[in-house]
Image 1 (spheres, rainbow, N blue to C red):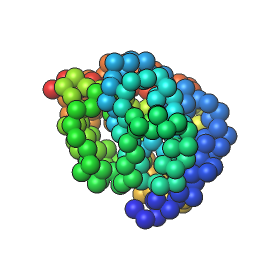
Image 2: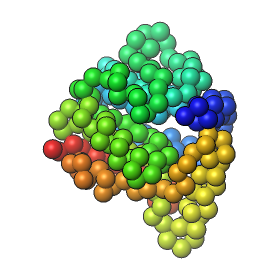
Image 3: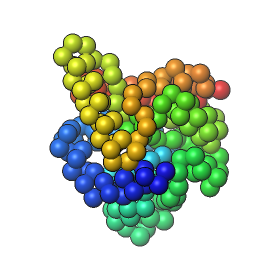
Image 4: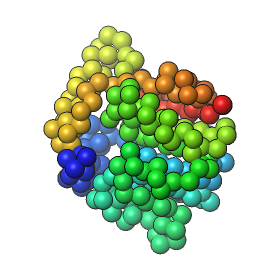
Length: 217
C-alpha cells in the first residue's frame, strides 16, 4: 500500500494532463454518460475518486446530495478539496484510507455507489471482494454506477485496446506497484451478487463502458 500511495501522490499533479493527452475529454464523457439516471440519489459513495474532477461535476449536478469519498492518496484529496466552496465541502466527507479498511468508517444507507476507472486496478478476486464488501451499504434497489475500460473491440480496434491496456498496466505497475496486469469484465460478478444491468453506454470504439447496475436482492 505504501508504494501505491506514494505513486498516486507523485502522479496527482499530472494525472489530469496525462488523461487529456491520452483521451482528450473522452474519459470524462464516459464518467458523466449515465449520471442523469441517478438524479434521485441523495446519499452517494464514491470509491477511488482521484483528483476530484468527476466529483466537481457530480456535486454540481446533484444539488442536494451528500457524498462520501474513499481515496487513499492525501495529495489527490487535497487537489479535490480545492475545487469546492466551503458550503459545498459541507456536503462532502473525504476519507483517506485503503479500500480494504474504508468500510470501517461507513454507515449503510447509500442510494448509489460510484466507481470510475477504479475496478480495473483489481483482479477478479479483488473486484468480487469489493462488491461483497460495499454492496451491503446500498439501500434496497440502490445503484452501482460502474465506468471503466472494456476489451470488446474487433480487428484493429481490439489490437488498439490490447496495446493501450498493456501500456497502462505497465505504467501503473511502474509508478504505483500495481500487481494486476489484465482487465476483468465484472459483469458476471455483479450478477452473482444480485445486481441487474439497467443501462449501458459504450464510447471510444467500445473501449469505454458506462454501466448502471441495480441491486435487486
